[in-house]
Amino acid sequence: MIQKINQISLEVDADMKVVSTSEQLENFRVKYLGSKGLVKELFNELKSAPNEDKKEFGLHVNALRIKLEVFYNEKKESERPLKNTSEAQDLSRSGENIAHGSHHPLSIVRDEIIEVFNRIGFVVSEGPEIEDDWHNFSALNFPKDHPARDMQDTFFIDKGAQEMALRTHTSSVQVRVMENNKPPIRTISPGRVYRNEAISARAHCFFHQVEGLYIDKDVSFADLKQTLLYFAKAIFGENAQIRLRPSYFPFTEPSAEVDVSCSICDSKGCNVCKYSGWLEILGCGMVDPAVLESSGIDSSVYSGFAFGMGIERIAQLKYKVNDLRMYSENDLRFLKQF
Ligand code: DAH
Figure 1: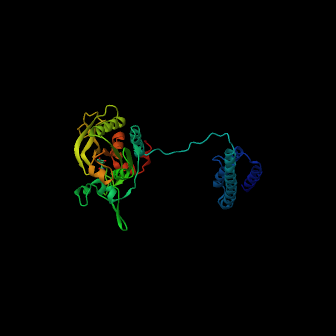
Figure 2: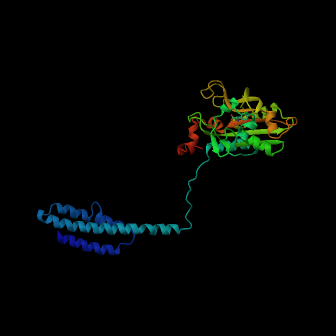
Figure 3: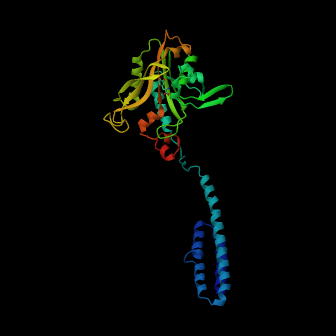
């Protein structure tokens, strides 16, 4: 048996010198290391060798096997960079697809809302997320200690001398726009807002709003109503209807909450509209003269309307997403659907 091992060993040495292509390497592997290869054959013979010779034969066969494996693995390894380099140099090779992300549903809806209002002359304005009391509350007719402030659970921030807060609504941007511009004003202000609420499917500690403001001479409630009807039709389809319910906000008088006809069940009644056929989408009203005055606009000359809506709410209705938490969990299975 030793003789046979030596003979194969010589053959191996000769073959090793000539292996250069990957095809030859594969043939080499099959011949010696394959399941029907010569090494396997030697191991089978080892079983029937006389017991006293087994150890010595075993050592030789194993040494041969290791030699073959080392040679094979090294060759295989050295093939790889060779292949890669030649590929990299092939300038005619077609490009690879680059995996790219998708737009977040809230960005899609925000951009759509902006687009709808751009068409009727509203321009985008923005304000800071860390706001002072004046812009978030006082200028909007929330007197200090007024119970209406409790409607909005505020995150306060201690910033040294002046107490600041994370804005609870984008209505704060209204004030900034009125302070810095002369009417006519037509603006929408998209942005993130914060409220100290326990996170659940229906509430979150941050969410997004779009605020609208229109100030000019002779602006009436009818203008507000037509603007909102136009918006509802643009977003929810030509058949959309709106209805206004009297409501209260400190910064508008009169104030209303606006419902849109349920596009999910065609107003027939479903669990989303709670079988009423209507879905609440925003708050609005005529800007309170006191608010105009505190921002330096003469309320005897100008009037205006304002409205504010939650982007998550509109997105929920458009995409039937019933859990608000989905929007900020960054779950790719969710995000990839948009
Ligand atoms: N700021 C209100 C909120 O966050 C929404 C709102 C209601 C804005 C009526 C308005 C408005 O401009 O007129 O709940």
